[in-house]
Each structure stands twice: as structure tokens, then as C-alpha cells.
Length: 512
Image 1: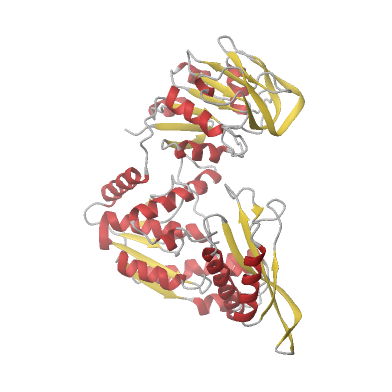
Image 2 (image 1 turned 180 degrees about the vertical axis):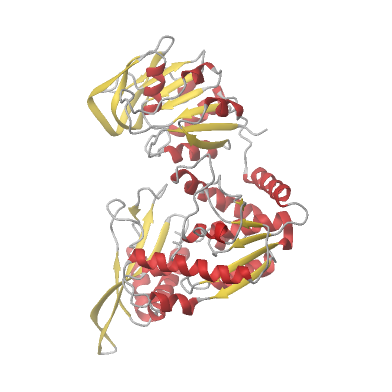
């Protein structure tokens, strides 16, 4: 039985990061709602429990609470921010409004550098985000860390293996946060750290075989993205040619991607593969449309209709598969129930419309970087596994204004040049997302001694750890100059290139 760490979610903005940090230590973790029944939690036999942060205060009548019996179950518990305050409150400590709020990076002084803080420095930069704080420990606890404005920055009861930290060890702004999490996992929870993508793949393949049986068939909507491609490879390993993939090509993918998807799933993983070129339909329905949300609606609607036409011609299939991943599950608020099926990459309400009652979602407990690692484990080409994140509506939302085949070609070709130059410069694994946008702005230029009046292309490149916030990438000037020159010289109707230097927030990463 694999080790399991359960994370009770109290609405903290960093909850997903806690799960990621635990998994980076090769320990499997899941996020569950704070109000999950205690009996269900204990039945899972977790090696440890982490209480997340959250926006509430324990003195609010509507504040999320847990059964205090959790602390008597003999399972190690780590409370973070609100989680620490909640543990202290339920166990007899005192929580009060801080005289001075702490937000941002603060120096935390460690009074005890053993146990939870083993191997850490005497003073360390940590990320704080709180208005309330613990002012008196519960019986049996002692204070092991402090800041200038927070005398009780961490508390421990080593006998009961209950710990609390006011700061956020899961964020990268906390210098030694990963070490603290490792100490909790391996010193107190006795985790083995043997969870890998190989073991995940073996387990998932076995579960798919058990679910589908010896003669069952599976239908997969293959978008061409990383998630659905990895699902296809995984299911193929489990049941071979009893998997059928339908790839709806809306004409809004990046350069070469449609052909790449067809090649991979015709040669490397020779599944039953159907490619439906519906680009003419999509462009016709998008004609004259400028509103981003309307574009999304049209693309989602057309995708469903085209897929239904292709699926109906196949006859009855037993199971429907899709590439739901863990952020979809968490953000839907359904971490312990079936994932909400989203439009675009999770295919709207399509499974139900086609008569399916059971879904196969083998990636629903993985984060994006874990999906990529699984793809490599399964033998998918590196260029497919590690390609840039791509929105469900495709290039349609990287074209400001009306979408036409001609505009799509400008974005497609300029984006290909951008990606090619980033890769040649060795920055493709350092810049987290980069693409071009057709701004819709036309401006005067001069080419070959003639006046031009053509489009402005924007370069968007960002660095980020989690895509919740992002900074614009400081690309070398010589590289930007080379990219600009190539786009203007090689892409028809592109006469000017600009660089987007806006962070997220206030901007989003995508333009629409």
C-alpha cells in the first residue's frame, strides 16, 4: 500500500502547492475538502495530514472547523497558517488579531533546530500572509520559532506529532520550506518516498484493464494537447487497439501539431485513429465574431457537434476517456467526487450526451508537470510532452478581433519562429510559456521602398512556478532582435513586432 498524505483544504490560495511539494518528495498526496467525514479520512489510513491555510478566522461563526478527534487519532498533523490557528484553537490555545499584520517575506528565527526544523538555518526568510495569529500555545505545546511581529511563529507537540507554522513552507519565497516539509514527511510520518511515475503508470494500467475488462472498448476525444495525448498512450498500453481516438482538427493548432499528433498515434501508438478536419466549419462560424467569450462558446459548441458526428458513425463504445488533471478537480471544488466536466479540454457535457455513464480519467490525480513526466515514462516524443501550454480554443484567442484563416496563418508562422529561436538559444526549459499574439493593430511601414500598412505582432514570454502569478521573461536583446527581424521578413502581413512586459497580475498570461 503506497504512502498517502492528505491535505485538508480550507480555501487557501496555496493549497495546490502543498500537494506539489509533498509529491516532489516522492510521496503521494491528495487534497480533500476540510469537511470530509473523519471516518472517511481514517479509512484512507494516511501517513500524515496537513491542514492548509485559508481566508477565515477561527472566531468567525461560519469558520470551517474539523472534528477535534482528528488530533487523537495518532496521525501526524502539520497545520499551516489558518491550519495552525485552527489546531491551536481546538486544542486549547489562544488566537488573536495581530497588532501588526504580516504580508510578504519575513525573517523567522528558529528556537529549536531539531525535529521539524532539523538542518535549517537559525534565521530564514519565510512567506507570511496573516492578520490573526496564535498568542498562547495549547497545553503540551511549545514555541519553536518567532518573528519581530509574531512571537508564536511555530508550535510543536512532538509526543503527539502535531505541528503548526504560521508561515507558508510550500511557496518558493520560503527559503527552506521544502526542507521543513521533508522533515515532516520522513522524520515524523515515516514515509518511504518511493512514489514515482513508473509506479503510477503500472498502477494506472492495471486499473484500466480491470475497469474495461477483456473485451471492453474506450472512446477518447484526442485534442492534441499533452493531457489527452498521455491518456491515449496510457490506455493503449492497457488495452491496445480496443481504444479509438477521435481527433477534431479545428484549424487553430500551432504549426505542425496536427501532423505530429497523427504521426504519433498512427506509428508510435497505433491506435484506431480518426482525424476529422473541420477547420472550414470553425472558421465559417467564427466569421465576424470579436468577443473572446463568444469565440470560446462557438469553438466548444462546434467541437461537440463534430465529435458527436464522428462518434455516432463508430457504433456503441463502452467507456469514454478524457484528460482531466488534478487542478481541474481541485478548482472545481469536487476533490472527493467526480470532476466537473469543462468545456473545451474536458469536452463539456459530451459523455452524457453520447450515453456514457462511466468515465476513464487516469490523470485526474496528477499535476501538469507530473503528466509530462508520465508522458516521458510512456515513451511519447519529448517535443510533444514538453511543448508549450496551449489554450483549448487554440489560436482563436491569440488573435485579437475576428478570426480568419489568413490571421491564423500569421500567428502560426510567427509563433513557430518564436519557438524555434527560443529553443536554439537554449531557453525553452527556462522560459515557462512563450507565444505570439496578432494584436489587430495595423501600422505604417516601409518595405522595399514601398509603403505598407500591415499587422503588429506581440511577443509574450513569462517565467512562473505555478502560473498563478507570472513575470515577463528578460530575453536577451540580441535574441529579441533576431526574432523580430525574422518575423517581419518571413511572415507575410506582419510589419511590426512589440514585446509584452506586463506581469500577472495585473495582466493574464494569455491576451484573451
